[in-house]
Image (cartoon, rainbow, N blue to C red; front, side, top):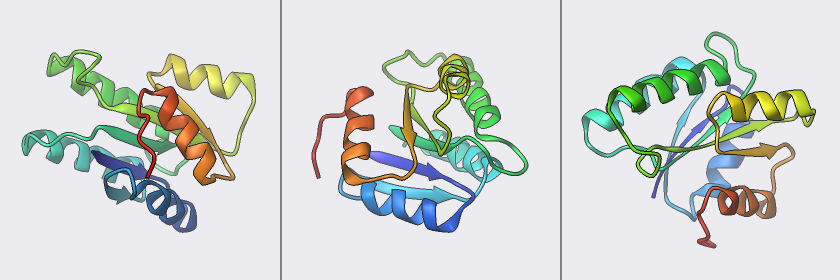
Length: 133
């Protein structure tokens, strides 16, 4: 499985990538702009990401803006829902507004900080990935 971890906080990005490395190969991006470049490159190489974890609040292109652009690209490529990346939003916020807005914006799951092996496994399970590292 190919995974992209996007978070502007180095510690969070590193922790999530470490927790996910047992599930597959992880690339990391420090912001939405870098994430979009990696996403596009992966599709050009015919090796798209299976899972993307996306921090909601980042400088520049926010996580939700990046998700919108990813979903627009997938639509333009005529990808089916099964072929599209599973996107899990990552945030410290737990409010109904943030959660519902993320789902409306095109994410498939939600992961709340602090992140643990159990919360990662649960979030992956919610998007249909049952593998345990």
